Amino acid sequence: MSLTGSQQKIFLRLLAALRPNWHTDTNLPAGISELFAANRAFGSRDRRLYRELIFTTLRFLPWIEPLLDTDPDRAAKAVAWLAADLPATRAYRAALCGDWPVCPAAVSAKASHLGASPDVLLPAWLTRHCPESAVVPNLDALHTRAPLWLRLQTKDAARVIAEFSAKQWPTRRSAILPGALEVLAEADVTKSDAWTQGLIEVQDLGSQLILESAGIAPGGRWLDACAGAGGKTLQLVALLGPKGHVDAHDVRASALRELEIRATRARATTITVLPTLPATANYDGVLVDAPCSGTGTWRRAPHLKWTTSAGQVSTAAEKQVALLTQFSDLVRPGGRLIYATCSLSRLENEDVVTAFLAARAEFKSEAAARPFEATPRSVGLAILPAAHNTDGFYVASLRRT
Ligand SMILES: C[S@@+](CC[C@H](N)C(=O)[O-])C[C@H]1O[C@@H](n2cnc3c(N)ncnc32)[C@H](O)[C@@H]1O
Image 1: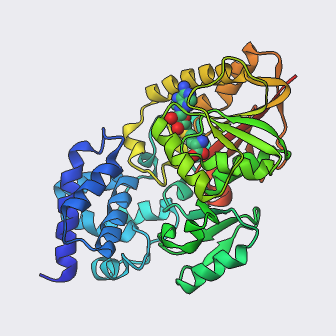
Image 2: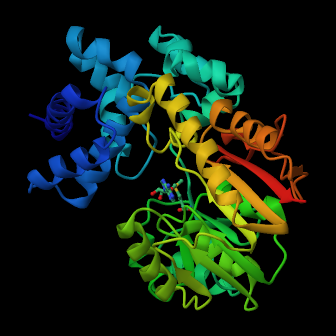
């Protein structure tokens, strides 16, 4: 059997192993890693190939799943055609679908070649919650592999760029945010001096725009109330400068331990990890980067399209209003409250902030200091995926009067 033939066979076997879970398992990427680990013969190039093919399958699942039963060879060919052109996929794609035209970027053109419908690629409820997600250009962006963005934690960008260039990892600085660097290669940036020395953090450009859009002044004591592993905590530390301080809180102790490791690597000394919050406080600013459905991250985590329901989004929204209300008490009069999600659903975004503002008249919404061409909502801004080729986010900036 040819190399491509055996790769196709392995790929279809991997899909068969994942299929029982892909409509239910929110942690499917962990299952994929376990499958790879169980296949000891896989090298890193094999893992990159199969990972891209599996994620492509999940991204276009309603087009591929029926073919798996009726015509598995065509399913494999369609996935190869839809997959990104990467060093790890190039030879496989050429061998399997070289006789098809070059895969177009637009979802509608892909659909017409395969005789499929673009309408089935997103759950109908998301289209209701965020109509822009289902049309060009966001539909196309949501069905394209996510880019790799870094946040520079050094003013010496040239040092990072030179190291990456020597590793054959081309980079591109963001036109709108010079501290954001896109890596235009499949790179494991954790295997670089820049990473070890804390000069970079992996953070999507859209995520970086959340705090950048709010125009945060240096100095002051802030609370990052849902800090997770600290992606935005470290950015906040940088924005506040040496005179500022960030208390980082989360309910997940494991995330806070990861945050401490990252803070040490970044040599950030103005962070205190707070596993328990004080009953009262007077923070100059509180960031509520709320737990959410993650609908904005579907290009990176396409399995979530098939495991997330409208009911879960409504439940998340109720929790978000409760968290925003709880943490708002810790903002001093005159202080700032920033609410953010990585969701595209209005239920978790402007509807949450509107409900909060209706109940807490002492908070007012403020215009974004730097809107970065984001899409204005009734309150706050949606950072839609196509605006700057990012994940989708929402941010609202409020002030306690
Ligand atoms: C969107 S993630 C935060 C991501 C993080 N800010 C970052 O930039 O990487 C939401 C976080 O909220 C945390 N969380 C959930 N319920 C919480 C609660 N009641 N209080 C504080 N944090 C909570 C979750 O553990 C999760 O880490």
